[in-house]
Image (tube, rainbow, N blue to C red):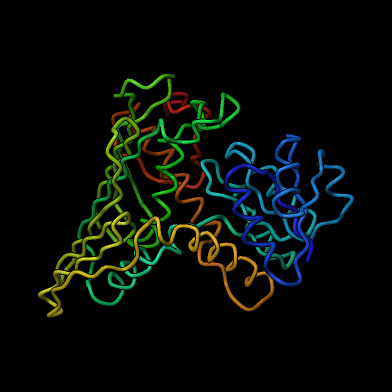
Length: 340
């Protein structure tokens, strides 16, 4: 299989590293930066293309899209329109609603990224929620990131330095994927979206969402980029008790008197398994392409995540609890929505 890796930054490098050891795969890199093409050649023996025309002339069967989030949609659509399988990193803006139907008609795999669904802690929490917790009543989740530690060697060319693709905005969508796998899709949301910290730039660094799922469960998601304390933890309460988890420590706590279960288990530290998670994710995509597996996160699910982000940002402007609807997609900036 000929795989075109589009984008040779940190995620693209991970994808090349994990794919190059799989038998039967030939990889080429598309990246306009000469230094990234040279690095891919030196590290992995992967030849690079400078232009899309050159890359298409090679006739790849698969696109791996690891560009900044605002460039995903057009590349996904190009892949699907030309009958190619495509994997795309986590989105802020969704691919067109019809992308999944186009993929099905063309017999190709369309795989929006779902990294957190492959993390052992998230997998275990999702299993507990499905099989032990009973009906979900409420949930909460906190992500706190030391944003200045992100890619300190990159300059303004790094997409997270810009308001449209800022870290808090991107990571809100990223964490919503994990919550989608645990408690299901969102039906409605209200949000506070602000700049509360003292970091350079004009980007919003704090997202606080009040969510209602399609089953009626209520929950909160807070994503902070202006706190030096790193945290990634949550809880889910249901008819049989409470499950709490810490992704960084790798722990899962079950307090389920309704199921006669009470324990705390260490599943997997974040640092120990992170690269294994990325490998498992891209391997699952290749298995879906080969017909030996299935992809766990649909285009419809990705659209729900992106529409939830948009509805939360819109809610900040309207002061209303907003319905999550497929036609609502994130604006260029969090304050640029047209108020209905």
